[in-house]
Length: 140
Image (tube, rainbow, N blue to C red; front, side, top):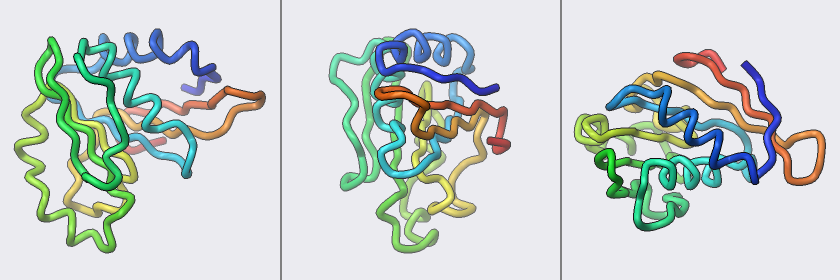
């Protein structure tokens, strides 16, 4: 499925995602730099009732958010120099949360858990829009 969304639509889209994803789901967020991955992650964390807004985990690698539904983990593999660096992340613990969102999952290689849903984001046709391609698993 493909959708064109405006940034103002993200809270509604995030609410749809939260309702559709089972507990302990793994969500891959893919797309180029500036595609809106972290912005979408911020909306998802807010939809789950987090007290603090999500920020980019690029330099911290993993961010944990306390939400009404349980912990949500947001991982950004962009800065990994090799997939072997992903071995230092406790992926099993992260999968126990309500949701695990992973940006740049390809950079983590086989260490990154397989997704329940992959969203590929890209710039949209107009200002402030994004195209989001949804696919179960890795098919985006």
